Amino acid sequence: MSHPYERLSPDLILDAVESVGFEVNGSLLPLNSYENRVLQIGLEEHPPIIAKFYRPGRWSDAAILEDHHFSLELAEQEIPVVAPLLDNNRQSLFEYQDFRFALYPRQGGRSPNLENPDHLEWIGRLLGGIHAAGASQPFKHRETLSVDSLGWQSLAWLRESGMLPPEIASSYMALCKDLLLQIDDVFTTHDSRQLRLHGDCHPGNILWTDQGPHFVDMDDCRTGPAIQDLWMLLSGDRQEMTLQLSELVEGYRLFHDFDTRELVLIEPLRSLRLIHYSAWLARRWDDPAFPKAFPWFNTNAYWQEQLGILQQQQELLNQPPLLLF
Image (cartoon, rainbow, N blue to C red; front, side, top):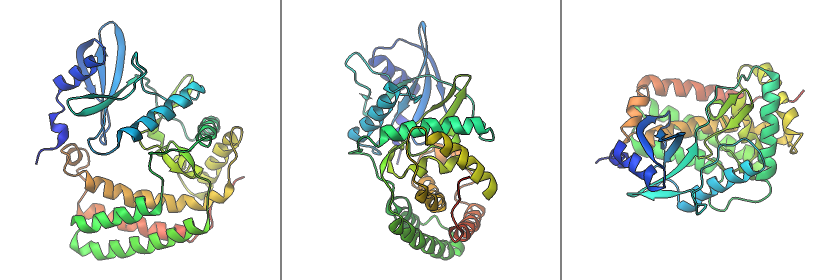
Protein backbone atom coordinates (compact mmCIF):
# COMPACT_ATOMS: atom_id res chain seq x y z
CA MET A 1 0.00 0.00 0.00
CA SER A 2 1.23 3.50 -0.77
CA HIS A 3 1.88 5.91 2.08
CA PRO A 4 -0.23 9.12 2.20
CA TYR A 5 2.89 11.30 2.07
CA GLU A 6 3.76 9.86 -1.35
CA ARG A 7 1.12 12.23 -2.77
CA LEU A 8 2.83 15.23 -1.18
CA SER A 9 4.68 16.35 -4.30
CA PRO A 10 6.63 19.61 -4.65
CA ASP A 11 3.89 21.03 -6.87
CA LEU A 12 1.19 20.17 -4.31
CA ILE A 13 3.25 21.77 -1.53
CA LEU A 14 3.78 25.01 -3.45
CA ASP A 15 0.15 25.14 -4.55
CA ALA A 16 -0.95 24.64 -0.93
CA VAL A 17 1.15 27.58 0.26
CA GLU A 18 -0.14 29.76 -2.56
CA SER A 19 -3.72 28.83 -1.64
CA VAL A 20 -3.23 30.75 1.63
CA GLY A 21 -2.20 33.88 -0.25
CA PHE A 22 1.60 33.68 -0.45
CA GLU A 23 3.44 34.12 -3.73
CA VAL A 24 6.07 31.37 -3.91
CA ASN A 25 9.21 31.58 -6.05
CA GLY A 26 9.48 27.83 -6.65
CA SER A 27 12.26 27.05 -4.16
CA LEU A 28 11.63 24.33 -1.62
CA LEU A 29 13.99 22.86 0.98
CA PRO A 30 13.00 19.80 3.07
CA LEU A 31 14.03 20.14 6.71
CA ASN A 32 14.96 17.52 9.29
CA SER A 33 11.53 16.26 10.33
CA TYR A 34 9.98 12.82 9.98
CA GLU A 35 6.77 12.73 12.03
CA ASN A 36 5.45 15.57 9.88
CA ARG A 37 6.85 16.96 6.65
CA VAL A 38 8.47 20.34 7.27
CA LEU A 39 9.91 22.45 4.47
CA GLN A 40 11.36 25.89 3.87
CA ILE A 41 9.41 27.67 1.14
CA GLY A 42 10.89 30.54 -0.86
CA LEU A 43 8.67 33.56 -1.45
CA GLU A 44 8.73 36.36 -3.99
CA GLU A 45 10.10 39.57 -2.42
CA HIS A 46 9.81 38.21 1.14
CA PRO A 47 11.94 36.03 3.41
CA PRO A 48 11.24 32.29 3.24
CA ILE A 49 8.64 30.71 5.51
CA ILE A 50 8.34 27.24 7.01
CA ALA A 51 5.47 24.92 6.04
CA LYS A 52 4.50 21.98 8.27
CA PHE A 53 2.32 19.31 6.68
CA TYR A 54 0.75 17.22 9.43
CA ARG A 55 0.89 13.44 9.36
CA PRO A 56 -2.54 12.27 8.21
CA GLY A 57 -4.61 10.73 10.97
CA ARG A 58 -2.35 11.60 13.87
CA TRP A 59 -4.03 14.63 15.45
CA SER A 60 -7.57 15.95 15.38
CA ASP A 61 -8.10 19.51 14.18
CA ALA A 62 -8.96 20.47 17.76
CA ALA A 63 -5.68 19.06 19.07
CA ILE A 64 -3.63 20.87 16.42
CA LEU A 65 -5.41 24.14 17.15
CA GLU A 66 -4.68 23.77 20.88
CA ASP A 67 -1.00 23.46 19.98
CA HIS A 68 -1.31 26.64 17.89
CA HIS A 69 -3.26 28.57 20.51
CA PHE A 70 -0.76 27.65 23.25
CA SER A 71 2.14 28.81 21.07
CA LEU A 72 0.37 32.07 20.24
CA GLU A 73 -0.51 32.59 23.92
CA LEU A 74 3.16 32.19 24.87
CA ALA A 75 4.33 34.50 22.08
CA GLU A 76 1.85 37.17 23.22
CA GLN A 77 3.52 36.98 26.65
CA GLU A 78 6.89 37.58 24.94
CA ILE A 79 8.11 34.06 25.60
CA PRO A 80 10.27 33.16 22.56
CA VAL A 81 8.27 30.34 21.02
CA VAL A 82 7.93 30.09 17.24
CA ALA A 83 4.17 30.41 16.75
CA PRO A 84 2.22 29.77 13.54
CA LEU A 85 1.36 32.54 11.11
CA LEU A 86 -2.24 33.74 10.95
CA ASP A 87 -4.13 34.63 7.79
CA ASN A 88 -6.43 37.63 7.44
CA ASN A 89 -9.17 35.67 9.21
CA ARG A 90 -6.80 34.81 12.08
CA GLN A 91 -6.77 31.17 11.02
CA SER A 92 -3.62 29.10 11.54
CA LEU A 93 -4.64 25.63 10.28
CA PHE A 94 -5.19 25.16 6.58
CA GLU A 95 -6.12 22.27 4.30
CA TYR A 96 -5.28 21.54 0.70
CA GLN A 97 -6.12 18.31 -1.15
CA ASP A 98 -6.70 16.48 2.15
CA PHE A 99 -3.40 17.62 3.69
CA ARG A 100 -3.59 19.82 6.77
CA PHE A 101 -0.76 22.30 7.17
CA ALA A 102 0.45 25.35 9.04
CA LEU A 103 2.93 28.09 8.18
CA TYR A 104 5.61 29.55 10.42
CA PRO A 105 8.19 32.33 10.23
CA ARG A 106 11.69 31.08 9.56
CA GLN A 107 13.78 31.47 12.72
CA GLY A 108 17.13 29.76 12.64
CA GLY A 109 19.75 29.33 15.29
CA ARG A 110 22.36 27.01 16.69
CA SER A 111 22.25 24.39 19.41
CA PRO A 112 22.36 25.71 22.99
CA ASN A 113 25.57 25.25 24.95
CA LEU A 114 24.29 23.17 27.84
CA GLU A 115 27.72 23.23 29.47
CA ASN A 116 27.33 26.98 30.00
CA PRO A 117 25.61 27.69 33.35
CA ASP A 118 24.30 31.03 32.07
CA HIS A 119 22.60 29.31 29.13
CA LEU A 120 21.00 26.76 31.44
CA GLU A 121 19.74 29.44 33.80
CA TRP A 122 18.32 31.41 30.85
CA ILE A 123 16.52 28.34 29.48
CA GLY A 124 15.24 27.64 32.99
CA ARG A 125 13.74 31.14 33.22
CA LEU A 126 11.90 30.65 29.95
CA LEU A 127 10.64 27.21 30.92
CA GLY A 128 9.37 28.72 34.14
CA GLY A 129 7.49 31.28 32.07
CA ILE A 130 6.07 28.59 29.78
CA HIS A 131 4.87 26.59 32.78
CA ALA A 132 3.42 29.62 34.55
CA ALA A 133 1.28 30.17 31.46
CA GLY A 134 0.71 26.43 31.11
CA ALA A 135 -0.69 26.22 34.64
CA SER A 136 -3.27 28.93 33.98
CA GLN A 137 -5.71 26.65 32.16
CA PRO A 138 -5.82 23.01 31.00
CA PHE A 139 -5.64 21.41 27.59
CA LYS A 140 -8.91 19.90 26.47
CA HIS A 141 -7.82 18.00 23.37
CA ARG A 142 -4.11 17.22 23.83
CA GLU A 143 -2.79 13.96 25.23
CA THR A 144 -1.85 13.50 28.88
CA LEU A 145 1.53 11.97 29.67
CA SER A 146 0.99 8.60 31.32
CA VAL A 147 2.70 5.27 31.90
CA ASP A 148 -0.09 3.63 29.91
CA SER A 149 0.19 5.81 26.79
CA LEU A 150 4.00 5.94 26.62
CA GLY A 151 4.81 2.58 28.16
CA TRP A 152 2.16 -0.15 28.18
CA GLN A 153 0.58 0.79 24.85
CA SER A 154 4.01 1.01 23.22
CA LEU A 155 5.01 -2.37 24.58
CA ALA A 156 1.75 -3.94 23.41
CA TRP A 157 2.30 -2.55 19.92
CA LEU A 158 5.86 -3.92 19.78
CA ARG A 159 4.65 -7.33 20.93
CA GLU A 160 1.99 -7.48 18.21
CA SER A 161 4.16 -5.98 15.46
CA GLY A 162 6.47 -8.97 15.10
CA MET A 163 9.48 -6.67 14.82
CA LEU A 164 11.27 -7.99 17.89
CA PRO A 165 13.80 -10.69 16.89
CA PRO A 166 12.70 -14.08 18.30
CA GLU A 167 15.94 -14.57 20.21
CA ILE A 168 15.49 -11.21 21.99
CA ALA A 169 11.72 -10.84 22.23
CA SER A 170 11.10 -12.70 25.47
CA SER A 171 13.97 -11.00 27.33
CA TYR A 172 12.96 -7.57 26.03
CA MET A 173 9.29 -8.02 26.89
CA ALA A 174 10.03 -9.35 30.38
CA LEU A 175 12.46 -6.54 31.15
CA CYS A 176 10.06 -3.84 29.90
CA LYS A 177 7.20 -5.35 31.89
CA ASP A 178 9.29 -5.27 35.08
CA LEU A 179 10.32 -1.67 34.38
CA LEU A 180 6.77 -0.53 33.71
CA LEU A 181 5.44 -2.16 36.86
CA GLN A 182 8.10 -0.32 38.85
CA ILE A 183 7.36 2.94 37.02
CA ASP A 184 3.64 2.50 37.67
CA ASP A 185 4.42 2.33 41.39
CA VAL A 186 6.52 5.53 41.22
CA PHE A 187 3.80 7.49 39.41
CA THR A 188 1.12 6.18 41.75
CA THR A 189 3.13 7.05 44.86
CA HIS A 190 4.31 10.48 43.70
CA ASP A 191 1.30 12.45 42.55
CA SER A 192 2.39 15.62 40.73
CA ARG A 193 0.70 18.76 39.50
CA GLN A 194 -0.41 18.52 35.87
CA LEU A 195 0.05 21.46 33.52
CA ARG A 196 0.43 22.31 29.86
CA LEU A 197 3.94 21.46 28.66
CA HIS A 198 6.16 21.83 25.62
CA GLY A 199 6.28 18.04 25.92
CA ASP A 200 9.38 17.33 23.80
CA CYS A 201 11.90 19.79 25.17
CA HIS A 202 15.17 18.24 24.06
CA PRO A 203 18.17 20.35 22.93
CA GLY A 204 17.21 19.99 19.25
CA ASN A 205 13.99 21.91 19.91
CA ILE A 206 15.83 24.90 21.39
CA LEU A 207 17.67 27.19 18.99
CA TRP A 208 20.15 29.82 20.16
CA THR A 209 20.90 33.18 18.57
CA ASP A 210 22.71 36.30 19.76
CA GLN A 211 19.38 37.32 21.33
CA GLY A 212 19.18 34.08 23.33
CA PRO A 213 17.11 30.89 23.01
CA HIS A 214 13.80 30.25 21.33
CA PHE A 215 11.67 27.13 21.39
CA VAL A 216 10.39 25.32 18.30
CA ASP A 217 8.14 22.36 17.50
CA MET A 218 5.24 22.30 19.95
CA ASP A 219 3.83 19.31 18.08
CA ASP A 220 4.06 17.10 21.19
CA CYS A 221 2.70 19.62 23.69
CA ARG A 222 0.67 17.75 26.28
CA THR A 223 -0.44 17.70 29.89
CA GLY A 224 2.03 16.36 32.42
CA PRO A 225 4.46 17.12 35.26
CA ALA A 226 6.87 20.04 34.93
CA ILE A 227 9.97 17.83 35.12
CA GLN A 228 9.12 16.40 31.67
CA ASP A 229 10.34 19.67 30.11
CA LEU A 230 13.59 19.70 32.09
CA TRP A 231 15.04 16.19 32.26
CA MET A 232 15.91 15.89 28.56
CA LEU A 233 18.31 18.82 28.95
CA LEU A 234 20.46 16.80 31.38
CA SER A 235 23.42 14.68 30.33
CA GLY A 236 26.59 13.16 31.71
CA ASP A 237 27.20 11.54 35.07
CA ARG A 238 25.21 12.11 38.24
CA GLN A 239 27.30 15.07 39.39
CA GLU A 240 27.11 16.77 35.98
CA MET A 241 23.34 16.30 35.80
CA THR A 242 22.95 17.66 39.34
CA LEU A 243 24.83 20.83 38.38
CA GLN A 244 22.83 21.25 35.17
CA LEU A 245 19.52 20.70 36.91
CA SER A 246 20.40 23.15 39.68
CA GLU A 247 21.13 25.89 37.12
CA LEU A 248 17.90 25.19 35.25
CA VAL A 249 15.80 25.26 38.42
CA GLU A 250 17.49 28.45 39.67
CA GLY A 251 16.18 30.26 36.61
CA TYR A 252 12.89 28.38 36.59
CA ARG A 253 11.98 29.46 40.12
CA LEU A 254 12.09 33.12 39.12
CA PHE A 255 8.82 32.57 37.24
CA HIS A 256 7.20 29.41 38.60
CA ASP A 257 7.33 27.15 41.64
CA PHE A 258 9.30 23.95 41.22
CA ASP A 259 8.21 20.85 43.13
CA THR A 260 11.36 18.90 44.07
CA ARG A 261 9.21 15.81 44.64
CA GLU A 262 9.12 15.46 40.86
CA LEU A 263 12.85 14.68 40.73
CA VAL A 264 12.03 11.03 41.40
CA LEU A 265 10.28 10.95 37.99
CA ILE A 266 13.42 11.65 35.91
CA GLU A 267 14.61 8.08 35.37
CA PRO A 268 11.06 6.69 35.00
CA LEU A 269 10.42 9.30 32.29
CA ARG A 270 13.70 8.42 30.57
CA SER A 271 12.73 4.74 30.58
CA LEU A 272 9.29 5.52 29.14
CA ARG A 273 10.86 7.57 26.36
CA LEU A 274 13.21 4.72 25.41
CA ILE A 275 10.35 2.23 25.09
CA HIS A 276 8.09 4.71 23.32
CA TYR A 277 10.84 5.72 20.86
CA SER A 278 11.30 2.12 19.69
CA ALA A 279 7.54 1.74 19.28
CA TRP A 280 7.36 5.06 17.39
CA LEU A 281 9.97 3.89 14.88
CA ALA A 282 8.16 0.57 14.49
CA ARG A 283 4.79 2.27 13.95
CA ARG A 284 6.26 4.51 11.26
CA TRP A 285 8.23 1.83 9.42
CA ASP A 286 5.74 1.84 6.54
CA ASP A 287 6.66 5.48 5.84
CA PRO A 288 9.47 5.29 3.23
CA ALA A 289 11.29 8.17 4.92
CA PHE A 290 11.91 6.11 8.07
CA PRO A 291 13.97 3.18 6.69
CA LYS A 292 16.09 5.73 4.83
CA ALA A 293 16.64 7.94 7.90
CA PHE A 294 16.98 5.15 10.50
CA PRO A 295 18.68 2.22 8.69
CA TRP A 296 20.05 0.88 11.99
CA PHE A 297 16.55 0.29 13.39
CA ASN A 298 14.99 -3.18 13.40
CA THR A 299 18.35 -4.94 13.41
CA ASN A 300 19.56 -7.43 16.01
CA ALA A 301 22.27 -4.95 16.99
CA TYR A 302 19.65 -2.28 17.73
CA TRP A 303 17.52 -4.50 19.93
CA GLN A 304 20.56 -5.86 21.77
CA GLU A 305 21.67 -2.30 22.47
CA GLN A 306 18.20 -1.37 23.71
CA LEU A 307 18.20 -4.40 26.00
CA GLY A 308 21.46 -3.22 27.55
CA ILE A 309 20.27 0.37 27.95
CA LEU A 310 17.03 -0.72 29.61
CA GLN A 311 18.97 -2.97 31.99
CA GLN A 312 20.97 0.10 32.99
CA GLN A 313 17.71 1.98 33.48
CA GLN A 314 16.52 -0.75 35.83
CA GLU A 315 19.58 -0.11 37.98
CA LEU A 316 19.05 3.67 37.87
CA LEU A 317 15.45 3.30 38.98
CA ASN A 318 16.71 1.78 42.21
CA GLN A 319 19.05 4.68 42.97
CA PRO A 320 18.05 7.82 44.93
CA PRO A 321 16.79 10.72 42.77
CA LEU A 322 18.98 13.70 41.92
CA LEU A 323 19.24 16.48 44.51
CA LEU A 324 19.51 20.20 43.91
CA PHE A 325 22.46 22.24 45.14
